[in-house]
Structure formats: structure tokens, C-alpha cells
Image (cartoon, rainbow, N blue to C red):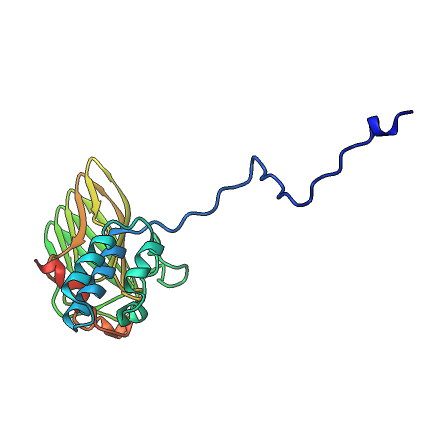
Length: 240
């Protein structure tokens, strides 16, 4: 028998093994949002005002910021600036309150039957408020309210009526509801601060209207009580 003919060739261990055809691709970085780019741009603007960056350096960096596709691409533009180490990214806002954070029964009821009911000015917001509009109008204005709880629920019912909710621009707003021959509309808002209050609006309307949205130019001035620092510099651009 010819042993040389039937012997198997020895593998060349000096060569790297070929990659598996079905190997998963390398993970890509987290995509940057417009809010991420704006926060980075604010850090650059502050550095320019403080003299940490020249106008030319600021121009070069700001151009790169608004071309960045991922959060990782944004980091090098502010890595050598103090603002990058002081900023705290906002946590994702859930569509529903944390279980157990808000009671099942209402702390306050607003009722308008062939009439109107209004809650506005400097008032303490309950964890849960129920609003009933039957051939009437309910207005809930939170723009000057005092938030003692981070999560607030407003349950709205409208039958041939109208429920309007207005919130400051620097809190988060979420909504979930439906309209039967009516309108249910909530303009979602994400605060730039991780621990800002969150208002959840839900319910349903029958031949009526339920609407919740931010009131432009209105902010909680003492939001630092909830987030630990002032957010005025982050919100100023929305006033333009």
C-alpha cells in the first residue's frame, strides 16, 4: 500500500483560520438623536464663550457634530471640555408609569357637566387626577404648578366635551388613549434632564376632544429640585 498517496495533508497552523460565513457582524454604535447633537453643540458654545475654543476650532467641531451619525462619533468633539463630564444624559421615558408609583384611585377630580372647570396657577399636582367633561370644558394648566412627584397621571374622559392639558416645555409628556367619533391627541415631549417630572395622559373621548401638549415658552424655573441643577441654559434655544 502506498502510504504517501493516502496520507492527509497537515494543516498550516501559521495561517489564521477562515472566518465563519455566518459570523454576526460587529455591533454598530448607538445612533445619535437631534437632542444628542444639540447637547453637544451647547457644550461647544459654552467652551467658545469661556475662551476654551477659538472661533475656528468651534466652527470645525460644530460642523462635525451635526454630521455625526452615532453617539460615539460625538464624544471626541467634547472629550477635552469640562461640560462633557458634567452633563448627564436623560433616561429613556417609558410610555406608562412605573408600577406602584401612582395610585389607582384619583387624588383629585375635575368635573364639568354643561359647565367648565379649570385648574391653573401655582398649585400642587397630585399623583393622579381624573377629568370628566360632559358637554363641558376642563382645562388643566401645569405650567406654573408645583411637582412633588416625578410621575403624574391625568385620566381624561370627554363626552361631547373638551379636555385640554398644558405642560411646561422642560418636563416629559406621554399619552395613550382613543377617540370614538372624537379626538385624542398628546404631543409627546422628552425632557433633557434625567429626573424631570413625567406627565402621563390617558383616557378616551366620545364625540369630544382630549388634547395635551407643551405651552411654548413656559418652563419650571425650580426644576433643579428634581434634577439637581438648573436647565435654563438647555432650554433657552426653544424661546427663539
